Amino acid sequence: MSSTASGKTSGANGTWRNWGGNVAARPARQVEPASVEELAAAVRRAREDGLKVKAVGTGHSFTSIAATDGVLIRPQLLTGIRGIDRAAMTVTVESGTPLKRLNAALAREGLSLTNMGDIMEQTVSGATSTGTHGTGRDSASIAAQIKGLELVTADGSVLGCSEKENPEVFAAARTGLGALGIITAITFAVEPLFLLTAREEPMPLDRVLAEFDQLWAENEHFEFYWFPHTENTTTKRNNRSAGPERPVGRLAGWFEDEFLSNGVFQVAQWAGRAAPAAIPAIARISSQALSARSYTDIPYKVFTSPRRVRFVEMEYAVPRAALVETVRELKSMVERSGLRVSFPVEVRTAPADDITLSTASGRDSAYVAVHMYRGTPYQAYFTAAERIFTAHEGRPHWGKVHTRDAEYLARVYPRFAEFTALRDRLDPDRLFQNDYLRRVLGA
Image 1 (cartoon, rainbow, N blue to C red):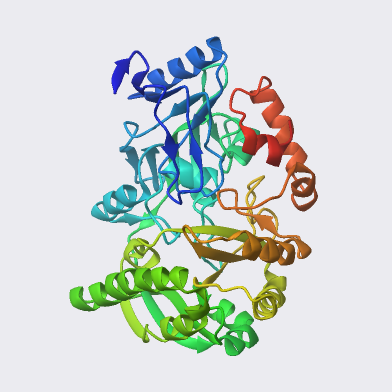
Image 2 (image 1 turned 30 degrees about the vertical axis):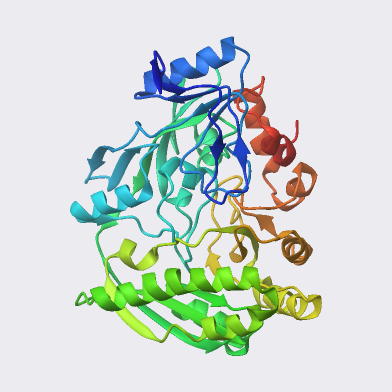
């Protein structure tokens, strides 16, 4: 890599690929700015050169939201905590900081985010910009925990945003899709470090669906995984605990989280790809492999888990009241279709929030995520699933495979026009445009 005034740049031959392997791009140049000033200079230079600009984190999105043939900003050098305000209970962090580094650093300070997703490889700006979320009865997505952010806009200026400073930008930019500018720092609300007790156990799907409202109401964080071609689910309930700390033992953790959930599951995916007819039998075995367990630990060690088996994913947010019907329809579709689905379906929830294009904007939501092993055909399954999700006015996760366009999205997001009007103001020349944003936001 050669160094320039705007950080490190790779040559024109560098091809960028996402984590799922389903998106590739050949940017004209890649830049790794080491400061906000270098990033702003890179944006101004791209504008002078007539090139579009996109920022990319760790590539965990399955859509082409970060792809560009222009200038690709890589924020690996924009990492670390800028400051902790214990009076306000906030932390300000550079945009390229991976969630796993933030989580570990906060824990050392006796602090934690309130809620988080189950993968922590993403950068803080990539995760929030695409609407990454966990599951929660009362606590919402990572973006909903933002108290302020700093943005480099299309003219190369730096804009501070919060509820008091540029509040209309703050409302939108927390989940901004990279359409409004490039985030350089985020201020999150934090709280004193606490303990969670996780209770994981198998449960028949019919029982989960029949008791879903009760399971949701009785637990701070409830989720379940249904294994297609079976009647089986694995459920997970996370609730705050007074302790004592009882983490998963090292050997048990390795056996269940690495050997079974990653190692054996990887072999099962290979076997299913080689012999699709065997997938229902493999699913029955996989769905019974994990036994019930309970443990108590600090939040990020409970919320997150390693994901080493690569996949492609589609996820939609439907109104929470429509969740049970949505899952029943999905199960019927798989049974009728002759499809062979080797990955479990993941179901989570989130309360309504006030972020313009959050998938939970203005409505209590349930998330249904379908996956396929990387390298296996997924279009038929995802197309059929998407038909079910959209019949319930589903909103696609911005970073996961979907085929929706601006016309559809304007119908399911009441504040859609508010976002596009702000974009017209902040980026009238569409410096941050790419094919994906043209589809989902309109030209």
